[in-house]
Image 1: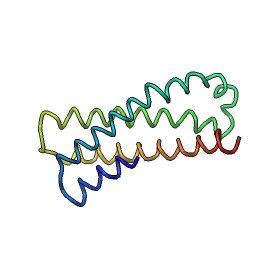
Image 2: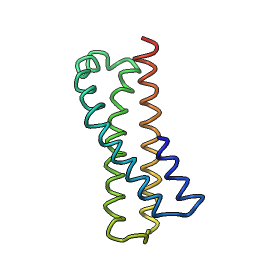
Image 3: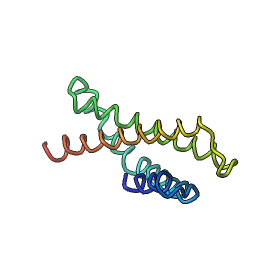
Image 4: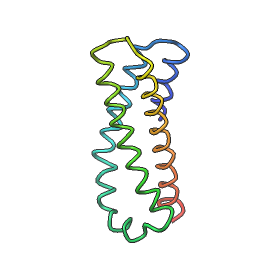
Length: 123
């Protein structure tokens, strides 16, 4: 999340879009690695628990979090794939897609923090 904030800073304040793209690309790559090697295995290990406790809010968040995270990752990849051939040319539609992506990524991050607190701090 810190990398995302840094990337947003370069886009909004410094207007250095090339740096913004590289920073966001690093964030996207690190997120993909953490999804594949940390989060997905943990989710699959806990599917039985999530199914048996799906009526409880922590488990519901535990299902919503990966959905938001994967959608945010796919949107991020879509933005990167869309902008790569065009270079710095960016239309309004891509900006909206970027805003949706960062919103979903932030929501997934916050839900992840809630899950961590619920399952690892409070239990």
